[in-house]
Image: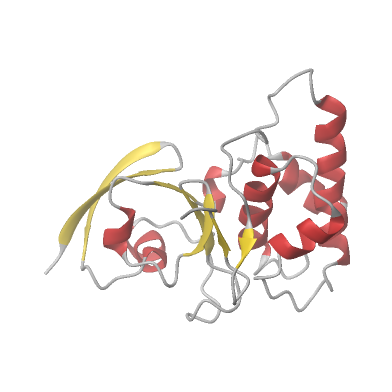
Length: 186
């Protein structure tokens, strides 16, 4: 039996029906046609399915659809577009931080959450923020450089324009056992 779920997806209200045992990943890919979020392991180990739920990175392969009722979900499709890439997307391109690209959407979403919470993270904080992601192509060096480049650019722009989309809520990123990130106090 399907149930109606109402939530905000990439800034737009959505009302969709799905069986309550479906994951958010399945709803996004199969019903809503948003295939940018990838399914890698299906058990929350690889990070490929990472989306933002109320600004917090979560594994959409583990999140059951009823849990998104009334909440805000952002996927990679909501990060930027062909006409205007998000600064992180452009930096990943500029630094060669994408190779096969399978893990990239999830890493970008976790990186966005980190920079919104902390526009000036240390290298260790960046490594911790992406620790829940497996990338077998890049070795992480270019990924870290790309995030640091956006951090530097944002730092230089601070006080001028806030149009980078990198300032936001107030999430304290804490690593959990499997590298997932959670909101402090949650």
